[in-house]
Amino acid sequence: PTYDGLAYFKVLVSLGATYFEKQDYYKSIDYLIRAEDIYDARIPAFEGAVLMNYLGILYYQEGAYQSAWEYFTKALYLMDKDEASMQAARRTSWLQNVISNIGLCHLRLNRPELALKFFHIAYREAKANWNTDGMALAMLNKGRAIHSLYPDSTGLHFYEKAYGLLLVNRSPELLANTVALLMEAHMDLDQLDGAEPYVVMALQSLNNNRNLTSTQAVYSALARYHYLTGAYRPASEYYQKANLLLDSLTQLDSKNLMQLEATRQKLSQERAERKL
Image (cartoon, rainbow, N blue to C red; front, top):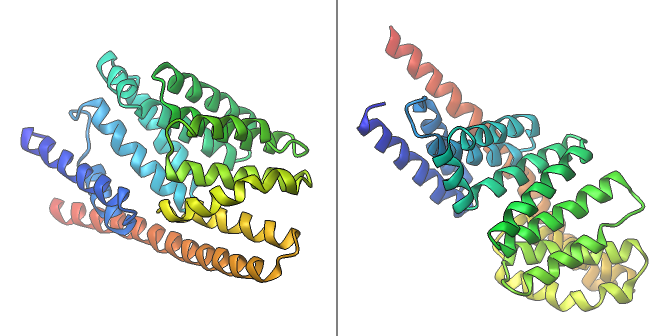
């Protein structure tokens, strides 16, 4: 594209990113797909990588893990295309995010060994920049991969490390996920006393966390804990909240995936009409 085309591309990505951060994925999809439609090799590699990562996350959220993996892989390729792009990716933490996202796709595609390798690299990148949130996320994901590889292992050791890192600089979403996983791991080991200290933190996380997925995980953990301790009324209330959120998230994922494909078809039709 011309300079104006590049500027338009940046505006589309910026708008898509803004709506993405607001969790308005329906609007985010429209802008990001349109940015992809005008993307070509003349756009700086790092700018393209940011777009590919956002698209990968959208597909991941909709459960299209193979498509997500393809976008994340494209993002990593673009970041590694030249030294300037790699430096920008490291400086802004985008590199560790993309590497972590590739690992998550491998985990969802039943490739935990590969996932673990990517999570290890993501941790190393985060540690190099002393990004405690990135380090904590890598530890959480390592725990998930270990549990997938060895079902008898709960990943508790890694969740505890993540929790320790988050006490330094608390990310509401990460802290909610960590507390939920810690509770679940202790309950898997029949250690209700071990889960108990995290109940208060779990309740507090509900006040600060706006992410619906991690909120649903907290509700599920609280429901299970109260059921196991014989507190059936609050257990029932938390189960209802967890199930309502799960239904809402499932419907939203389906709607967003339909929007992704509808926008692609619309742009494809517009291109075909321009050629006539």
